[in-house]
Length: 470
Ligand code: AMP
Image 1 (cartoon, rainbow, N blue to C red):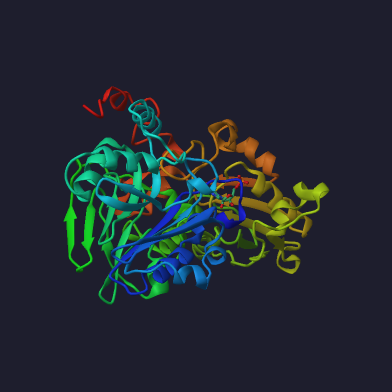
Image 2 (cartoon, protein in one colour):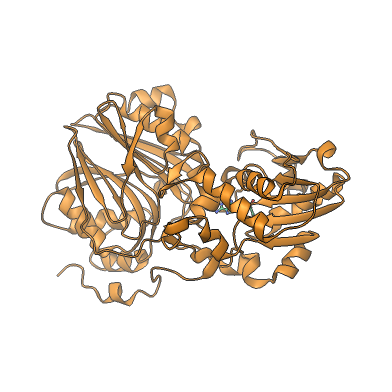
């Protein structure tokens, strides 16, 4: 299912930045609208007219927050924006981004997608030296490090702060005349550069460019920091030691929009290939292949193409169930998935059905969906998952539940099959998943499937021993 429909998860975020456009905040708004799937908890835009800064942030969805009235007050040619579903920091208005602060050199605003893995250690150290935090967001640590870095211009300070920070980040920073965009050296999260007329734009995914008719210039490289001035000059820096590229494979499996291009690949194409690979490696005789909308769509098409088993739409999705839907108190548990999905009986009845989804996390969604499909008269239900078992939590910006809540961490495939009441269940192997990327297959983080974490987290002794302010 798509992220909108699954409240229990905490997703990463979407970021957007634009400079040199007379309607910067409106472009940022449209970009954020296209990036809504990356976070539905809160949204915000900061803009500047070269003298003053304007900020609007609120809990909720982009289209609900930014009225014409509010957008009209976000003046200026430069803006950054952010959609959030917390990966660190609780769900609260004070944790909304972009963060806007005044420091020694004036105002600056910052928006971040990812997760700093040494955040808590840095926070402890900063607090020990007198820093006062206003939020529980890891991003605020960066703001403090920029402010404490007491020499050079903003560019030097951003670089200084990021030399201390470890983890996953795609970040946009602005002051009144400059836009900065930076990706961590491992390139965990996407960030791309586009152009619209004379204006430059950066965004988490290309679907944001499509909406505002911006042209993709290129991806910002892992470990690259670009500085765009209000004169339209772009400078590129590679200030960090090189690291092994570890882009998030789950962006392709589930998180990114299928119409986006990230990490050198079209998301839709990769999902389709994952489906083909799944069909090749997990064959079963059946009458139809159906996706769980929307996340299983491309993989199911690929599965059907490869297996020759007809594709059909056996489940319909209601797109209008927002978070505010009121359910009768007694029956909340009964509705759940039913609010979003309903089987199409005429497609399913009497058939042996292969159901495709991108992942199983806790297992509750698959269980409910299979029950529905059986009630609609399916003869057999075979579940196929276009990724390996999700067995480990992510520490780099996709907030999966804790390990003990991940069904694949504590149960065998036979046990999961029984729990979700499928006739059979098979996943894609890690190797087959990575195969679809061809020569790039080594450039991915698949820690949520393998437990091989490319960057050390929590007990980061080096950061602990680091003396920040000597
Ligand atoms: P579950 O019931 O916990 O097994 O949920 C599985 C469903 O959640 C699948 O349909 C996935 O598409 C979806 N899903 C997987 N990862 C996430 C995530 N990080 N955020 C929201 N939904 C997700």
